[in-house]
Image (tube, rainbow, N blue to C red):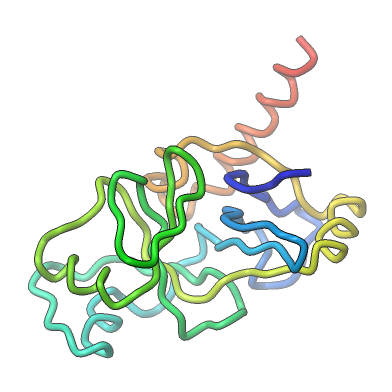
Length: 175
């Protein structure tokens, strides 16, 4: 099953604090594994912290940063609309891409930003068989969310919105 560009929505039975009520956007899938980012868990750090840590002086207001997952938690990436790119941009689909390089910081500091984006630290990663087992054990729902839902919905409401969207998509398949 191709999950790239889809969202995993944690079922209420997931008790792990990091994944409880989480929505995970999947951006890569291959024989070695599946990678995504949690898009609704706020981090205590801001973009100012990230920029200052990398030697940049941000001039704009600090923005939210999200905890993308437990793997490589010091890495910073941007989930963003696909019209924007840097030297290390992975185009996920026609709407969304992921970037992670120093050029993205330089571009942001100089006012060159994508139409929509989220700063994220760390990723969520699974071995293909591990995620398959979690799906078979009904730990996750799979849904297509819109770019607006992914990038603009308040993080405190995104899980509820994702659950409602999944329910509607499920009903629509049978009607």
